[in-house]
Image (tube, rainbow, N blue to C red; front, side, top):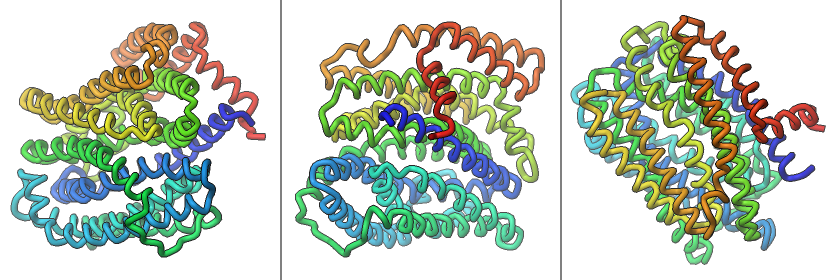
Length: 505
């Protein structure tokens, strides 16, 4: 099977797994909304999730991102033994570091909550501090899980990590339904902690045939020094991205009650799109980017970047416009029940409209992000993160008075656009190529025409009161017909693959 067909097959299976997992994720978020709505407990829980995330999620993402190309390079050039020795050293060092950070986090939680949620006080502040301490414990396990996931993906093992989402969602749903009546938000918090711990043990079981744990700790290893040199810019860049979210929630803590929940719930809906499509594609493509960079095959790397941008543009056009026009319907269907009332629908749908503008810019940003990381160039992504967060914060303060929670969401989308402009220019300099080598203007032009026609169609259907599902079906059929008629090659490649290879024989 060729690389392209193997990518298509793996991506298709992962999309199916992700779709099912995200449906369960939707059920989880709907249940959280049912029991807690946008009230005080929900505000405390969502902010508490953000506090350890600023430290651990940033560190975890940075290590995982730099680990995959280094581990892949060792696999290709030096063999599995050397690659796994490196992995063991990383896991043990990260374990020690995580324990130190955990102790600091438990002690400093009150100060962190005060800093990151300045609008919180009294009972809301105390509850957020208590939940933060519980969630800090789970962050240690998530750090180890991220390295094990990197080992699996570097060995072209994608399905196992994707399947863990089923178990995580099941635990959170069960804990919330069975125990929230008695323990309130603590039931959800403890269930989230248990799900994270179980995910780590599942990863340990999945990786056994490719990796054997050994208690190696060698701070003098040149590979560790190289990783540290690479990780510092990534850490700063990832930290800056986390700061974006923290700044949004910190500002939202000074708005009406429910604003933080609105940002969280609308972000979960955005995450549905990201999890099914963007993240799935990048999970598969990133190791191949790393392999092409290791072999210095930059022509094919440019080709993959161009095709990825075309594919994301083709898919995100209809999703964006349907989300913008039918945001209230989407939020109502998914969340409106129990404690999640009309005010919560209004705040969340307003936030969702502006976040939807960033669907495509976020996806293409991820393509360039992974391309630079695959070349072990982490400085460019760090600078890009600084551009994004500066844009986000400036626009936050420009729009928060007029658009309130919508202004915070729009600032996020605008920051993705600024990030893409920077990345395109940076990649052009790094590869010494023209913009036409990475952007297929002919295909993008055809897609722009389809975008205008599709937008007009969805506007018409929405104005006539056509139901969301019917409008999506009618719009989808006509949109695919437009793409086929204008000769979009990515659609024809996908259609041919689905016709000949869906049986995966």
